[in-house]
Image (cartoon, rainbow, N blue to C red; front, top):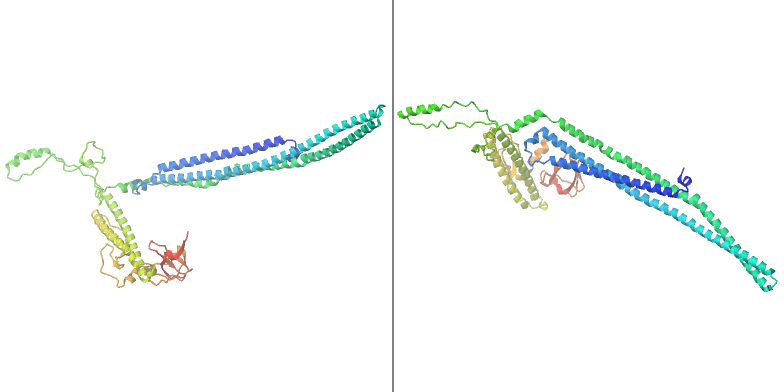
Length: 538
């Protein structure tokens, strides 16, 4: 069943129904848009909530940072932030897949419907115009036929009039004949117009309008189908992110189950243990002894020792700092010192050890930088086209100064740590560094210079890398590189390559401008990073 057959005479109903359907689409788009705004506001509020309670610590040394309960709360805030991201994704998909898509589709439907209604109006206007022509020809035929009848009656009356002349009779007959001829023409025209109108009317009701109504029916059904898809998308949009939301909720559950109260208690002990011994029993102070001795001491010739029985011998150890509101010198906060002497013994040892580890890491970094500069200087000396060795003098000098300064600090903190009873377990670092001339100086791990020196500085520069290649197992490649230029690889420790050659990357550039690579045959060496394009494995 179709509208063109069953609703051929219900143009107004069809027009109203299709308009109502388009308004329903507009209403649903508005509904989805408001839902999108709700999701966006909800996500924004969740993010602000997570940000409010996830205040970034200025230092990782805060005591709470190591507690599992504190870390679990941070994990919950992170999961909530991810959850907010999924709500934003819902809002974005609703906007893209429903609001924007349906709005564009709605505009196309409106334009298509407008075209069909205009075609219907044009057909209606054409039929009305034909009807007006038919009505005009009909009235003209009626008028001319009456005039012909009157002319015929007048000619007959003139012919019977004995007083009329022959000329009058001929004239009346000619007039009647002419009127009859005109009436016949009008009759034929009226018949032609009637046939034309009936043809157009048949075309209008059996072809044109049914076709337009069927097109409107197809439009309306497509509109309903698209709207139904929008209804489904409304649900599927949220179902799509449900697995990720579920993972966020699982993460919150996992954060709760990871809380370890016993471990937190041990961390509190570790962080706050002072190392002091518990205070012993207070001695009985007999104030009468001082009075009784006063007379006997005056009679003896022995030197007098001044004893103040009212003076406290020791300071009491108080668990609670707010035992008295009275201001005393003891209530003043201790001055923070470089050797952490203001801290309890146990905490002092930990802070000294931590500071010493930091110095060793920084020292190792400077030593590596010095080695890299030395290698680069050696390459520049052997290959002047690659750079000026003198340009590295200031950097080498600055690095050497930094190494000496850090070794001094290391020695100082090692001494303090030994005084505090620490074990001095510091990080080990490479003992090679380079002086201002690029020569290799050998230092012992404690910072003292040894007497050993290499006869050839250029050989010492790459000795460490040769040992690495011989002693270590072949490291797995972390990527590959393609040579953009030829490189002779004349210096020791480097490797030659040809333009377009593909090599495996074994070690990334550490800031010195060199990358360690390997050929398929196992040959390894360093190449200038700027000579290749590198692609690292993901």
